[in-house]
Image (cartoon, rainbow, N blue to C red; front, top):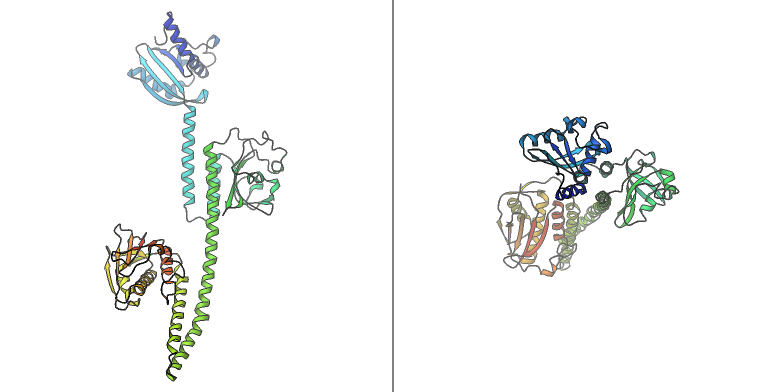
Amino acid sequence: MPGPPRGSNSERDLQTVLDRMADGFFALDADWTVTYANDAGRRILRSAMSDEAVGANGAVEGRHLWDSIPGSAETQFYDEYHRAMATQEPVSFDSYYEPLGTWFDVRVFPDDDGLSVYLRDVSERRELERRQRESLKAIQQLYAVSSDHDRTFEEKVEAILRLGCEYLDVPNGFLTRIEDGKQRVVVSHADHPLLQAGETCPLDEAYCKRTIERDTLLTVVDASDEGWESDPAYETFGLETYLGGQVAVDGEQYGTLCFAATTPRGEPFTDTQRTFVELLTRWVSYELERQRAAERLERERNRLDEFASVVSHDLQNPLTTARGWLDLLADDCDSDHLDPVERSLSRMETLIDDLLTLAREGDAVDDPRPVDLVATATDAWETADTRRGTLETAVDGGEILADAARLRQLLENLFRNAAEHGGEDATVTVGSLADGSGFYVADDGPGIPEDERDRVFETGYTTTADGTGFGLNIVGEIVDAHGWAIRVVESEDGGARFEVTGVESA
């Protein structure tokens, strides 16, 4: 029969070792009778056996395993033990043991006399694995929500509050705005009547008062036990469980993101759960900053549009009138003073055209279409005032995804830049980048000094007396509008080479 033999000192020593094991061990004979169990194994078996099956002083030896444990024939233990006995091969498996609420790693070793069974408590490991799965699922869901461009900010926040409530097992999640000594719930996923969107209260009566005083999350798992009963916030809301953090926008306090319940939690929040809530607060902070930046950009764009409208109407009309009077004056007299006036009016026209273009080209390209780069470059060359220069192309493939009109404007400006700095007979090459990431425009002119290359796209940058300083700035705006990138390097001929990357082939 399996189990420690009786009698000799070595046999008694073996029994002592088995009894001291934290893991459960018991032995069964070929008739499924328990022949031996160490202390842990005895406790496990007693918890499963019916009261009448357990012997005096809690003994389990001599009891038939399956007859003593109600419902045991329908368990994984029954199936695996029988498999080991029938095949005489060891088996191992994990299974949940209902009487103890415990997961066991079970290893069964058969021999001619029966089975030896070892049971290791792996509940902590299984719980850790469960939490890891839940954490991974929560992170995946958070990514799906945050990257969903079809949802508004409020819809995204409501979704992550619902996600946080599920992950933390609490019924209330809410985003607050704190200003002028008051707390206002901005977005909510909650069943608490005072935590619905739009609800307000004095900050002194809110848990958030303590939250914004801290650099880290405020955590409460049993408010009654942690001295909150006399706090006005507890009297108002009655929250026993609370986990919240600050939300800041551009370094300034905005409010809080919180999760709460009116019942005690019973156990501390894990480090992973706290980290998850910190991640949510940072995401909300980032989204609010991005939203504020977008609104600021929209206001600036509207002001630029208004300015462009003023330029177009209030400047172009008198400029047209002035040019008309200049033509009449040229018919009446021959003066050396007329040419400087003509040049000044032409410069004003160029400035106005560039300003209008700059106002127009910054809008994002939302619907790029296939465009033939060579054909567009050829058309742009004809209208770019490049005089006796030469255009060469070295483009691999045909079409790229772009806004055709703005791509042509980009090329025209680069061609004009090459002509202005390289002379009337400049040679300009449009080609594909070797790695296939975009295209380049290179010339054989004097080039751009290395210490000035980062400044060429700034508004007002020019190295010529009659330059407007908007040409390359417009190029940069068009590149940004497409989501591309541009840099300046030296060309093979020592001139300037503008490389545009991030361009998709059609």
